[in-house]
Every structure is written in C-alpha cells, then in structure tokens.
Image (cartoon, rainbow, N blue to C red):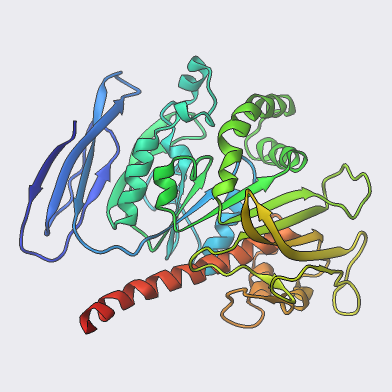
Length: 410
C-alpha cells in the first residue's frame, strides 16, 4: 500500500526527484506543493531485504518529450543515438563527475537512458535463475514506468545503473528532466504504461544475417568476447527475442529494417545492405518522407551523371503499404554511396525531410562520415528520422506554448 504525504508552501519554484531503491536517499530543496509517497520496493541485491522506492515530486508544467528506441543488443542503437543528438547540437557525453561506467548520455538538449539500467537481476542473478536480460522477469518495469513518467512530468530521478563491465547493479545516478528524453534498449515499448507516454517510437529491425555480422564486430572488437561465446549468446537469446523484443515493432511509429542486398545474386558477405524506412501514417506531428510523389509507387536508379555508383549500384524504392494492419509509407535504399558529397542529389528528390535548409541531410551525413552505416541506408534513414524527431519536438513545444495564450483569450 502506498503512503502519501502532501504539504504546501508559498513559493512558485520547485526541485524534486524520484529515487531508486537504495540504502540512503539524497535530499533536495522544495519550494512548492510537494507530494511524497512510497511505492512497493524491490529486493536489495546486497542484503536480500525489501527497500522502498521513494518518489518526491512538485507541481508544475513539463516540456520533456519522450522518444523510445527499441532494438536487440548490437543493432546500432548507440550510433543512432549519436546521430540523433548531433541533430540537436552538442556532443552527447556521460554525466560529468559521476560513475565512469554510466550508460547515460547527456547533451545540451537530449538525455539518453539505456533501459539495461532497469535490470532487476545482475549477471549472476540471471545465470542462477536461468533467464536472459530479454526476459521481462529480469527487468523492473514498475520502476521504469515510474521514472520515465516522472521525467516526462519534469521531475528528476535517481536512476539505477547496470554496469556492463562487472555485470553488477551499481548505485544510482541523478537524472534531471531534459528537453528530449530518449529511452533506448530492449523493452521501451513492451510495457503498455511506458508505451502510452512515448511521444514517438522507433524500432531497429535487423535481419539475422546482418545482426550476426554486427554483433561479432562489436563484441569481439570492443568487449573481447570469443566467436564461440557470441554464437552461443545469439542462440540462447533467440527464443526470448522472438517472444519479447521483436513483437514491439508493431507499436513503432517508424521502423528501420536492415536486410541483405538484392543487387548481388546469392550474396552472403553482408557488406552491401538493403534498408527500408517504414513510416506509419496518421501519427501526430509526423509526416512520412516521400520520393518524387506522395502516395505513388516509385522505383528509381539514381546512378549516372549526378551520382557516382560502383558495383553493384544503388536502387531506391518508395510506395504505400500495410504493416501489422496499419497504413504505412515505405522508403527503401539498396546499395551504398561512393561519395557522400553527391548525396545532395538524392536529398533533392526527397520531400517532407523536416530540414532547416537545403542540403542539411547531406551536411549531417558528411559530418559523421566515420560513423558505421554512413555510406548506406542505415545512416541516411537514421539521419532523416533524427530530423523528423527534431521537427516533432518543436511542434509539441509550440503547441504547449500556444495553449495558455488560447486559454487567456477565451
């Protein structure tokens, strides 16, 4: 049972937070109406006892826009986050002075939270119970919902940290409400409560062939895992991925599908990719990008005098379709760019890009030419989605700012 205490003072400014279950709780100042309540706690990993979650919040308006990004491990979420934060300006960095193993990234406008931080079991605990990190039983969805909702409402939180190096749950870190909150990980659209508070959602849908190649590259090069352990991990995770992660794409407003190329017959190298941007119709603040003519079915080979293409070339396609029973528009690119500076030719044939100036997509791609996927549709469509999210954020903020003025005129 929750215990609530309400108190009121006269000032119009407030500071507040929601804490993760910890042995000690920091205190911040309050100057406005305050509500303090204790939620059902979770079991302490160290002592085995129940530790209550403490939520402290203050009244007031909030402008935080929440974006959900879902994908399996090793599917390019980190690169997507770097492209997204770059669109808003400022480099995304870990919280200063905090845990060096923090998964959080903070820029001038955005805060990116890794949902691995809401694991309820550490690596040893998952092994003992025989569950993977994909299993809902290994995650604290109640705390995830409480804290994401708090940040959306303008309330700072003390978020736990899952340490990917040690596999342990580290002490929490303070996260303040940003202008844009991105929650990325395995389950951003799994819990309907969290799903309902998302302003926009994206799913990175990587085919098994491409996923395997990417995971080998990341886990062998960056985390020192052996090829055998990576193969075993993929096989162990597949049933849970199919059961709990993959179904989330039906709820996404935009899906980026990464598939093997169709330009090379019987290709098995996976170096050339076919990428689809599936955009749901009728989403508030979001107008799908189109090629040449909105709603038409288009097949376009841009290679020639204005776009340099080596073998196997480049092919674009666009048209209406259905996806899990919903009307969508699909933009597709197969192949890769030889020269990014020539991307301006392709950009000039795309509409509804939500750019601020002519050539902004090309500029963003050139700015991050060293990012994975910059020569193919993964980088192009991630950049486009980033620009669309910026436009969505600006529309939401403008609408909120206009509401008090309209009310005053009434």
